[in-house]
Image: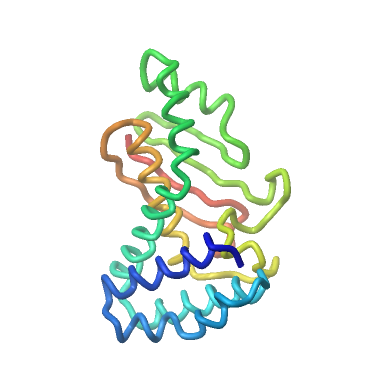
Length: 194
């Protein structure tokens, strides 16, 4: 496991402690110190799967979603290059409508966009990516094909999508997580309220 993945696990721990306390953090993060020492993607994914189950058992839905959404905010800072590239593309168009039309015609690899009025759907299609995978998150790359993980985890992606679009549009947006590939669907779908 690389430094980035270790940092991601540490970010989960920070946010669990921040929103649910040290006692809950210790329970959710059980076994993470052994996971951080391994490079095995399967063991990492299985640990994350277990951590999300523990989080679901110990913390109410609103709080656990907030925990993972904040992890996504952090992920957006780690992946700021993707956001900066989208902001640069946005500047090439006179207005947001032209930009969104262009993005729908030629979306980023592994994504699709669909617009219905003031609602934009961002869809991740990890199984159709250059190298098919279950999830774009490096912590879940080793998750077996038939395994599922709680949709709680995907609030991390919701946080990333929120920060992505807020940066590109230069204003706050509301994002809704509709479904995810790792929790049983074939793709991940987010609604962005423009």
